[in-house]
Image 1 (cartoon, helix red, strand yellow):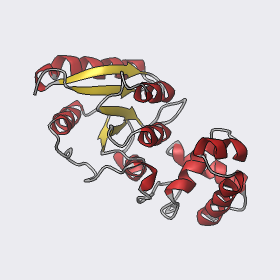
Image 2 (image 1 turned 120 degrees about the vertical axis):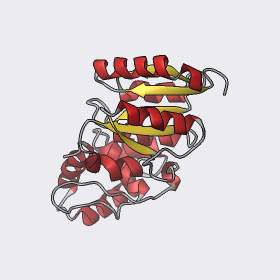
Image 3 (image 1 turned 135 degrees about the horizontal axis):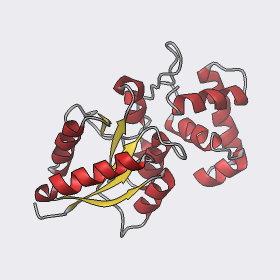
Image 4 (image 1 turned 90 degrees about the horizontal axis):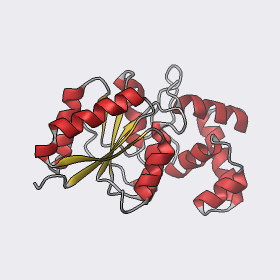
Length: 223
């Protein structure tokens, strides 16, 4: 493997963590052909980097708990752009808290942010074209994969039954977009958006759209 032929993007709103990860990769993996293409502190910036072909990486390490646009939304947006970019999720919380959510968003693996040795093994495996250890086995590909959505909320409540389209509608809705704006983003009709929301209300067993938005927001924050 030639030097710097596997490009890595890093996104974490914690400046110290971002600096530590960048330093780790640059100091430890040059001989493995792994380089940091860029490091940014917001989900929006990461998506922009993936849109531009000149800065598009082979993989992105994504913090699940970012403030502006959370890791789940960031990975979904990147996955809608490209099925080729590998997504490596990380968290400082319990892995069980985010495991199924990370998988449903297209991540290949969920890593403990404090486990640098685990990250090192993962990067070497991925750069060599192997499935990462303790990974999910398959990388979900964009909205074509309905996948298994299971995110802990409170008690045993889950959202396994939601389709990829329904999840995408809710992701845009909790960002404050109207049904008309969501329809434009997804290239579907406004009535279809409203139908998806009605289905979500039924599946989440809530009374109305406001409760669905509140519950979905809590799930996205890992609450």
